Image (cartoon, rainbow, N blue to C red):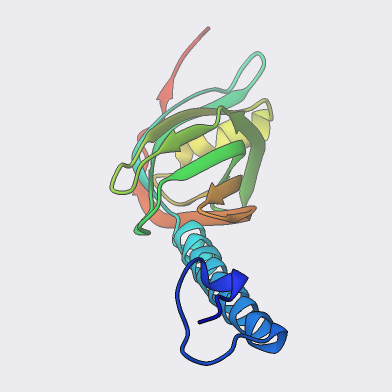
Length: 176
């Protein structure tokens, strides 16, 4: 009884030719490729299922002498995938109605499946006209966006998520 080197000790009743060994190798390679592709696809779906939710918003403004508007937002980051996520190069953006605040960089984080870390971000605009507008506006559309380099399973890539909602503001004035 001959043994095929690719069979790792399994016996065959028929002769094992090099052609048979190549077939076994190709089947194993194909199986590894399919498993790897599935692992990559699930990681990609996990990363792309990233969701952010605006939890709290607090704000203040100063109209004079140098006007500014400041908004502190707590954002909850969630993922419904089976793998944990590693976030790096995280940047948050904020738009109130049609006013875009300068983006803010945040530290990266790693979390397991089912966890949902919070980020508290402070956005500041030094435009006095915006501060004046915010001092009068009550209901505004708040859009928070997050862009990050996300790794999950075998997948790595840029992912953007956003959350938009109407928020009732009660900006409070500060003189310093």
